[in-house]
Length: 301
Image (cartoon, rainbow, N blue to C red; front, side):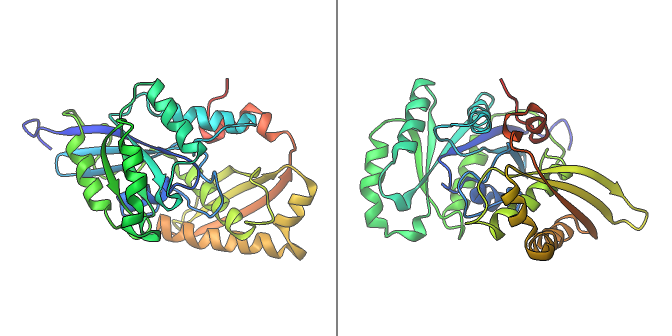
């Protein structure tokens, strides 16, 4: 890239209620999986930055934890991190589950906060593949009447419908400026933390109904081996002895399944052999302890 080439760069914050489809949209815009996605609400805990570099433009897409009324210290930290992501954003996308047909209390609370911050946003109605277009009109008219949105897009983050049009809007909206990251960089999240998130995704998927949300996966060790493979050690932290038994399964069968699925995905993601070793420990107070938050890149106050 020569100095004569005029470049554009900026950041887009993706916000919304839990399960609105923020992480699915990020992955669809990037064209590959970066944020984990599960059926469980509040899956995203960390701020995930995904980078799109096309032509003369670079976009930093910020996937944030779902916005809701927090109760625990962890939830308060997650919600604060989501709102903090708006500070340096050039554009804010509010993702709304269109299948709901009308704004629920969570969406209304987010809109009230955006209004108090005098924050304009682009509205993205997601999951339109689950509802007929004519039934979207009342919701679209209701949200448009607030005057908060500069534009409204109807998409399916899952199928990709409408996403290219949204992407074109984002590329065109970035201000002139130098790129913040190398052209071939996908994210600023470390491989250690991405690997821990992949394991947590499998944990949530395989124990969706049994295991409560209050579980964490901590990166413990990362060893590069001479043959090009990598050895990864992680600890799954749960809050009760009974939860540990669920994760382990009978004769350790469940944790073997979790480890096997996570190992396969990590091997494909990193393009090399991964040796994954998992441990499980009980710490009923982990959500109140700052050292855990720092691992996730979340600040506590």
